[in-house]
Picture 1 (cartoon, each protein chain N blue to C red):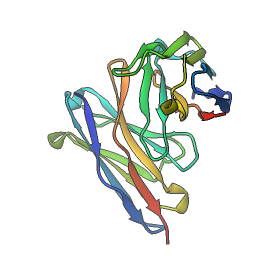
Picture 2: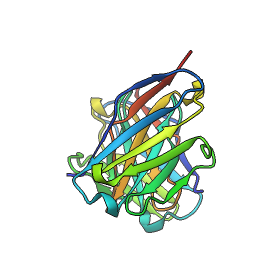
Picture 3: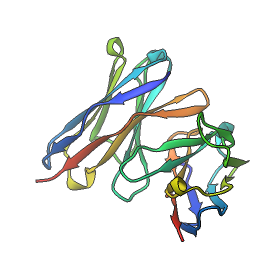
Length: 108
Length: 116
């Protein structure tokens, strides 16, 4: 199975700053089927980015995804107060689906 | 649009079984697989298994093999996840999801709490 490793574990930033989150996979992800999600306590994951770089419907353009193969990045250009949350990556191109352990973005 | 709606929260005692449903709409049910994923408190998401909506073929994670059974009712466009021999460590949110086109669509989640 493909192992996903996210870094850093926690990112402490101020509103208005930019954030760069990394997701590395142990093998290439088929068809770049790599997604990024935002999750807040008690809520289901919210899809932000699919297929590594496509923004989901209704997601602000301050969120962007990049990368291919085994190295992927989620960038948040300017943090808004509602962006402080946990972000995790998922690969769904290979069976079984696997997930990163998450990066917590909290307020500095 | 594609939608997955799950059954409500469950409270169970250790040793019991739980059956969670996931009703699909907005697409041809038999053309896609539905997966089950769980998230224990503070843990990363964990894939449990999937079922082919067309032929009913299933594949399970080794971690849950023997305790999880996924079935489907094509007439109701509904998938069921049955987890047996529950223990406290099974307390988690359980999600169904489907890989539709280029992305994954998720159900809203079902909380299963196991406590004596």
